[in-house]
Image 1: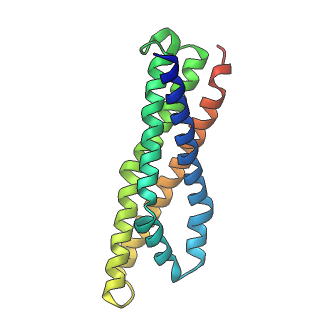
Image 2: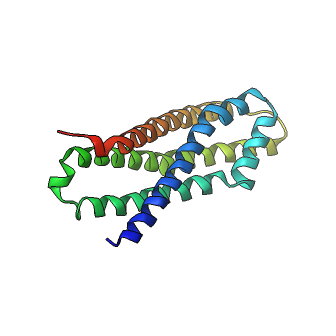
Image 3: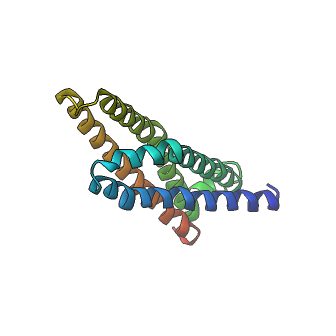
Length: 174
C-alpha cells in the first residue's frame, strides 16, 4: 500500500479511535452517573445529548472510521492476512486488539444503540402519558437499563483491551 495512504489511514484510525474511546469513557464514568444524580432533569439532558447533539451518530461515525481504517492497516501490515505475520508477536497483539475493537463496535452498534433507543422511546411514552410509569413500564425500564449498563461495561473493557494491545503490539515477542 502507498506510504501516503498508510499514513492517512493511520491518522484516521488513531484520531477516530481516540474520539470513540474517549467519548465512551467520558459517557460511562462522568455523564451517566451525573444524569442519575440530577433526578428529573436527567431524561431531558439525555434527550438533548442523544437527539439534538447526536451522540449516537458521533459514536457510530468514529467507531466505523476506526474499524474501517484499522482493517485496511491490518490488511496492509499483514501482507494480505499472511499467517506468518498474524502468528508473530506483533501480529498476535494487533489481532487481539482488532478482535476486541470489533466486539466493542458490534456491542455499540447492535446492543447499546438499539437499547438506548428503546429506553428513549419508553421514556417519551411515559412522559407523554402525563403520569409516572406503570409497573410494567418501570420493570421494562429497569431491564433495559441493566442491559445497557452491562453492554457499556463490556464495550469499555473491549476498548481498553484494544488500546492496550495495539499500543504495545509492535514490542511483543514470542
